[in-house]
Length: 196
Image (cartoon, rainbow, N blue to C red):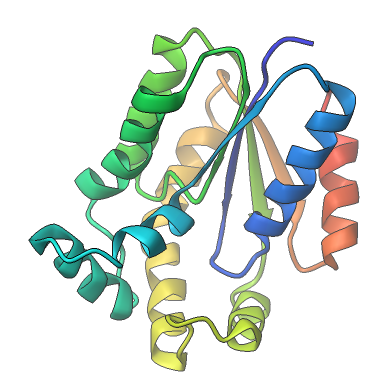
């Protein structure tokens, strides 16, 4: 099996992280000799904002307000990790990026640069109501009611054009998954639609 590429997109609370974990385990099971390189932008940001540099403190204010991080910082968050740690022969999974259209273009250039063909775009399509309910239940630091509403709002305005970029792009395999199902049912749908 040659190295595969996966991009997970969906609302906050749709279960991307859970499905990334399941896909990672599945890839290790079916291709045990190959590593899985996973970029989880949200986790990277949560670690980043613990620092005390000027940029980190500004980023923390954005995070705590439930706003979308600036594109340059979002791109840096995963680009520097790829540059420093990616060996080139791993399966590659991105979780939580891209969110904006310009980020999608940048990520597209990365696949071209590394010679990676036909990434799977896994769109976990969860309703605003279901995603909000899940976020309220997990009670993370940035999961207050006002913060959740802001994230649902910017998802509708910023991520929708990004989805259109992938949905109509023949360089990607676009998979739309019903995110309102149980996590087990979501995984079964993902697995059934992947041609691995």
